[in-house]
Image (cartoon, rainbow, N blue to C red; front, side, top):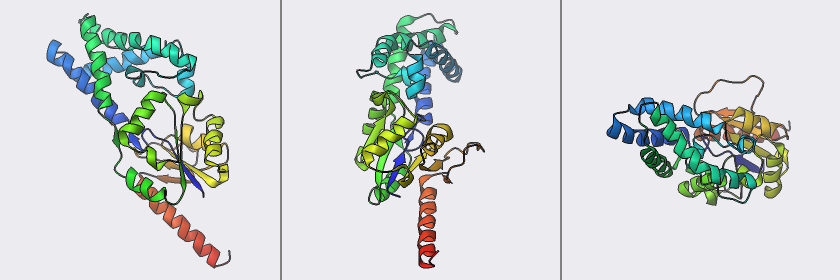
Length: 271
């Protein structure tokens, strides 16, 4: 093995919890001012923004590079791609309407307050860039042994903010973000791109990620080894079988060490 390539969201960087915390922190402002239950508004705005997101003028692009509805609530959509320019123009309207429509379900038709909530969510989310505790020890050790790559779907400015906010850039030899190249996992082209930049053949690299479909199946399609980081105990898909499975990076490290020890033993035995 010459290279390890990592997914980012919910593999290295905590995504789901900071998103929920940002929503709840923002919704509490509505509870303080209009006595709207925080949890109920949270569920409502999630549904509202998801429905509006499906009406995006660049829907196909969002699906291709992997942008979620909640990411649209704080993305700046920076970049020269025509689709990013479309989203950059549409984004402020989307953010405002997501909160305004949610508030109206509780009888609050106040567009100025909706604008305040839209701004508050972006600020709340940007305060929350968190690595899993096992990430830096793992990257620090394995960056000395392998070439490391980071392969992430998403909006360029958001993903770069997460990388900068968690200070992980220095561990990687190459970083590829789907929004910067126009296609994303599981498209084989994005795997081929990062492997080319790393100068490594597919069979000499391993993809490590939390998504069976995007990370594991996509990498397997071009002949890479795979490790499924199943941090949340998700159900298995019997049609997608990774080479390794671990609940965290500490466990994955042990699996690597056992694999190396077994290889050495077989070599010494002449097998």
